[in-house]
Amino acid sequence: MTGHDRDDIVLAHADSRAHIGATKILTRDERESREDAMLAEFATRGHGAGNRAIEEAPDPHRTCFERDRDRILHDASFRRLAGKTQVFVFPEDHQRTRMTHALEVTQVARSVAQALGLNVPLAEAMAIGHDCGHGPGGHASEDALSPYLVGGFDHAIWGADVTLQPLNLCVETLDGIRNHSWSLPAPQTPEGEVVSWADRIAYVCHDFEDAVATGIVTEEMLPDIVAERCGRDRSSQLGAFVRAMITAAVTSGRVGMMPDVAEALAAFRKFNYEHIYLRPASTRQADSVIALLRALVEHYADRPHSLPIQTTRAVLGNEVEVSHIDAGSDVALKASVAYVAGMTDRYACQQGITQLNWDRAKLPFAIGISA
Image 1 (cartoon, rainbow, N blue to C red):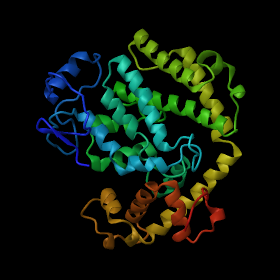
Image 2 (image 1 turned 90 degrees about the vertical axis):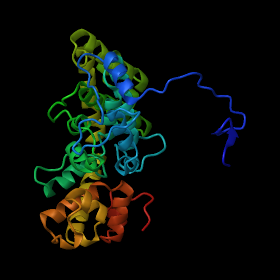
Image 3 (image 1 turned 30 degrees about the horizontal axis):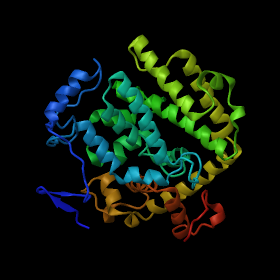
């Protein structure tokens, strides 16, 4: 099937009736001018190729932040999020993975950014990439990998400074990814602050929904402050949180949330920690994740020659030869951390079986694993 020749072009369908009509293809410069006129006063503007570590020619049609968004979407680190834990390992069809979480964060961020007149492609790029630095097994991977790095392992910082570094993203995009966690310094752009809120809004709502579906909690257990101010279903909750951010911006000119709804969000998150994230089964799972990932790091650090060349070069630079890395050295540890952090849950378990000869009973996610 090669398509259908019509009027000097090839059409996908023989009966195609789609017409654009008279139109003018806008150049990037023209689109930037329109964007500049439409955005809010302190929204982030993109110009030319953007502010990147390595200079490059601008795209003829896409803005610099649209290019960032596209690069992240096509990167292996984003694809691997489909195989990484959000809350539930090897999720069933209706449960979230780290990738579906990123997509839901993106939609919340887009809804808020568009309403506030902020740079939507920049918010999308930050949101899509915000968790690309996560290791397998959820947040337990940070505890597992921290001992091997000076300053520890933080998925936000690692994602911006290591995982996504080869993409040569704009400094604004990287800043939003690096600082999306509330425990870190505030992002330098309003779009980055929107993504920080969108992340918390999305995971609080969808993690509760998944926990209800698996029978860990019930809707009736939801705190009254949440049910009364935001509703019991995810759609109502998302709408309430997004509207509270928009109202806050209209009221104050700042990125934030109205106090009564922010109080409900805090109570919602506290409930999730007590009943979902810190329940005994989650703690046992985290302990198993930590044991597995540390064993893998130490295994590969003692055998740096077995690490993929692309991993060592991405982390250590093209000039480093794997054969010149000393076993057990800091360089070997950093390269090993990068390799293990990039693994999906399933691949990490497979490596536990094939490389460490671990019994399946020791693995944190043994379901469906074959040697």
